[in-house]
Image (cartoon, rainbow, N blue to C red):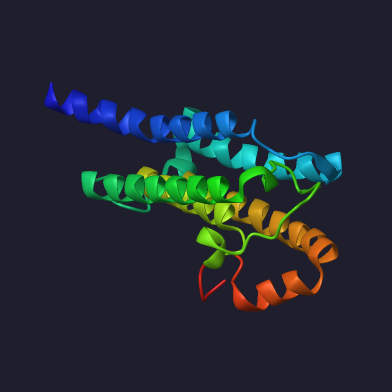
Length: 195
């Protein structure tokens, strides 16, 4: 009975955390400003394809077979809960950043009418703290899984968001000019003092 309870926690805790985060994200997406300019549809499709492939690697049981199911970390409760804690921390950081950004937020690369450059709160630590939170969440998920498919999902996610940052930074420089250039000098993109 105890073993079955633990297995149930392992099977459902990570998806439940992501679903709680997703519920907040969908609910809060209603409170956004009017978009004046948006990224081209092909750019958005590329991003969603990379993120979708990462999610499929993590979520679909078919990828647990063979080499993708190889454990690079021991399958212990300690490792699982460390990963789950990193996932929760990443989700909380992304939610904090999303709330702080307010109506300037958009799921796509865009410029809003009356767009403001936010430099305080989580934006004082990272220029793209929502992406920092997402990447932390995927890293935590990869650790909790402890399988090779988690590493591949993390790498796909990282590529997707580094690509998005590169494009978004061009837009922000074009819109905010020197004030964004100064912000770039003062604050790292994803990890304070490092990256």
